[in-house]
Image (tube, rainbow, N blue to C red; front, side, top):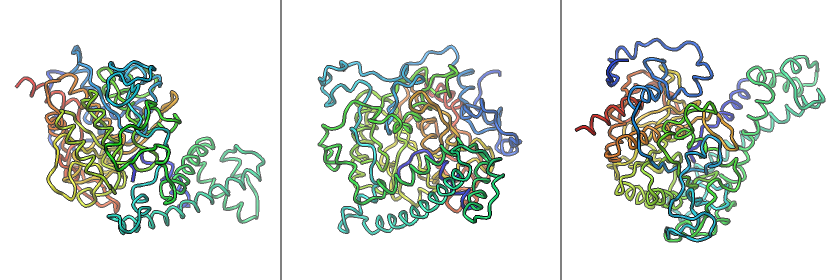
Length: 532
């Protein structure tokens, strides 16, 4: 399935319904000392939570990336070169107050003249390209396979998965209807749309349905206000009906509006230059991802970007509300490479692929041009050594076909046994390293900011670190940057819970490096390698 932020509204709603400073040295704290560090027993203050991924494990007792320490002790007084970071995603609000100063502008294109000035096949591609045109919703790949019929490769597997998902979706819809009916009953009794926990508790009735509604909302409003509930339920409703009407609907054709052949890589004259997309709110995911990398540091307008002072964001819209097409991803990667990106972030993915070779070729092309790809591991708690996730740099545990790809799992701010995000995919051979991905505060469309979560958020955190390395140590290759990030991470041997069954595992055994990303260490190692 498509990799986006983990939908907090869904897990919350279901849970409620069903329940009723000297010289710089790399951090080399002995493992036995790290594992005996006191756990943080008090919640992070809001100002710290908003930028916890920038904090330091030893100093702050949260598994951040030591970004603040890197700026203070390694980068202070140094000047970096600009690095273009390609964001292949759902669209980016390039007019956002905290992003507009860091948006890439194509120097070879003249805005608004309706001419392909740089002869790259894309007219007026000023800030990137939109490979989806005005399309928003799309089927999942398994739905497209089933639609094509029994002769399609992996049809039986896709059909079984689709049937399973539709069964779960119907249960979700029943639960949603139950919540909405309960809300309607309380509104009718109180004769108002907005109500408080106290007002709900004061309801006196013998009517069974209203008693059930009272009990349900007594739970809901214990943990949130009615306004917060309204927001959560809208998101939950969008999720349920988005799947019902589009993602899992065999009859839906989201590609019709694009007017291309999605199986023909040579059919390239499609899309437009509106990198936000036709509806700004649908660019939420991509805008958040871009903000993690590049929102302005220290301006008190939201969170802080990992590398805002040295990056330019190239916006490439290729991920719809559903599963992306391999062709769009392949062309998006190639577009970023050809237009100067040195780091590409891919916070997307799926578990079926009909044209994976198109993306494989694009990744190899990026490798040949010295471009690093940072890709989210996925949000289904899968072991990627067992389950293929597309894209990756290896399938079926074969040797890696490229050396310029980092696959990133997600961490929570809770150091210790709950350090790995419950949703994060993992894999000793197929996930490279972990980084902050839960409760990440960043830009969202129309000058707003939100906490989102997912490996989608972990990936741009690492892309930001990679951009810092490429900016301040530009002689290093993409492959060397990958090596530095993996080697310089902090190795931990905590016992954690992971997987769909939440089994116990040693943290160092759930990724190839066994480590968490550390910007401070990475920059020190980059400096050391450069001097050599």
